[in-house]
Length: 455
Image 1 (cartoon, rainbow, N blue to C red):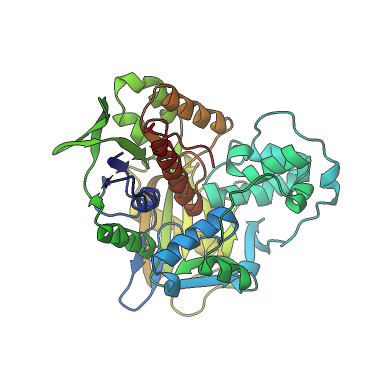
Image 2 (cartoon, rainbow, N blue to C red):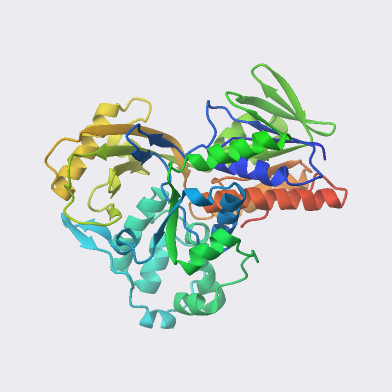
């Protein structure tokens, strides 16, 4: 295996390239990013006065194998000194609110699950998150807390999202132990054995709830890009939109606007729909499955006010759909809006104006937090098609895609947020998994059987 092309230079594509360039089996890695910058949804504004505002993910959880994996990479990139940890005793961890009946209510840190052990196991192979939580923990919790949480995490509707794909730990706990409580106590299945490096060990010792970076989350992909550049084995191309890919005698021909590139293998970190649009007619069945994965648009409006104006201290508050369809949540420097309800509330993302979004965000801050002054600084970021929606049966679609790839001997791996998890940790880990599969396949002399399993 000599040349691997990575389509998409977001955090997933960069992570896959990082793992590829550590393998002696790969001679050359070509990263093709259609936009003018690397990093995808990890995007920050750094002001000259030192203030940093996030327009995408603003923190990463250190927990579990996927969390350790990310921290090990951060360690290797030399970013350890840039880390800003938030431990469980911090006010931002302890104080999270939900806005219900026109009032802020502090989220309880624990819920009573004593009776949950007695609830019977579900019989279906998938279920909506709302149905699952209603059945096991009660409708009120599903209607308010879980509805709000799904809007905050997935910008989506818990009545449509799949519990199996969005919260596999909960689904597996019920399947393997018959109960969430027992699943949490006894474990809900095997997890990847991944030894923690110094930073991951520190996160455990200091009890981090999450972490971010001093210069903003964008400094993560920036460091990763610099590392890849210095490796001498990775070619990074911006403004390099892929028009078509066609199977060739060995691997693929990749058509760009200004030329053609050959690669032995493709790792696609593009959104599923974008990949569908460049596949050849011979891959029509795969294209149809990819087209079927919906994405939603989120507006992130950063706001700065003079002085101390918040009525509460904490991380922010979430808003159930019953309270306000358009506003998903308010982190205490930004308002998140739209998601699954974007079209219904704001119309087409193509025609909505920044002024309209800014007005809606400041109105939310006024009505929900009682802030009557105007912001002294603002930034509107419209993140189009940024979060995939794992509807019920999502796992079957992903299994079918990977089955088709294997069956047709396509030297193609699928990674990124469209398939196996939307968090930064999940996306990075999907890159690692695909590379391990690929290198493993290469070792046995079969470079085409490189389908990444679900993680």
